[in-house]
Image 1 (cartoon, rainbow, N blue to C red):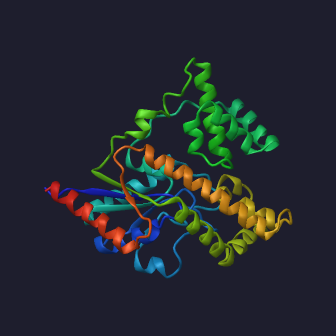
Image 2 (image 1 turned 60 degrees about the vertical axis):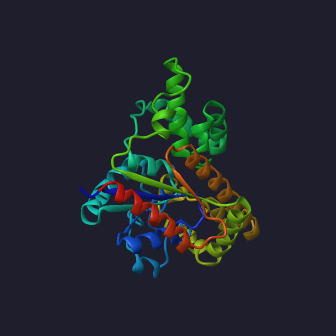
Image 3 (image 1 turned 30 degrees about the horizontal axis):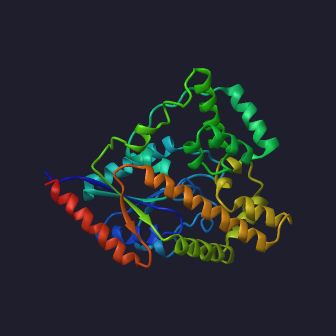
Length: 320
């Protein structure tokens, strides 16, 4: 029986996942299923680094621009949406390809997540009020003190996830458990995959990665990111903070458009926030078991893609 295989290309922002994924997709004759918590949204294609208008014509992309800017998405919802896509590709091509950098979305897509404790509406209300009054960074600092691993995987501006994580921590404390059982550690980092799976993690020498991040930030600001944010602000859509407003750069560009900071300060803040996010992505990737690491430093996408294709061929051959 021919083996079926799910291939996931994961890595920090700026490492070159999109180009590598397209090389692999073209050779395998499959589509790319995006694994990015912000590319699911319409409205900010430049800021969320969705492929340009010409690139998707070469390779079909799924799970990009499928949600309204104010919609609230979760890892569980993402997993439900991509499971039929994965199954369809496995039936027709024997291989499904996921490409992205949102660790929890990837984890949820590949293996079931343990159930979280029930929500506490009153506690959630108080935490949301604190986020509004003190700023989300205060919640992130509190979470880091209580559960450093959880904090490492959540952006300091992601109010929804910060509130939920602190809610879980407090629920566990009340129950006499110092650390929440549902989020930890063995189940999260050593998953039992739904399908035969190859997870490839792309790494890069830090100086080169930072240089690429800084350069891409410049290109985004010149290439329409400011106009995207201005358009959403002018549209007056309510609830963007639950959706695409969580994108790195939205707050920074909004501050620039509001006259609070200069364009140069906006650029510096955006670059710093993106570098910090890349560090969190690398932390997540290194914690997951069974990830095959590839150093992408000073290498072209075609060369990296060829290495991944060799791994895929060996994995499929072993399943015959």
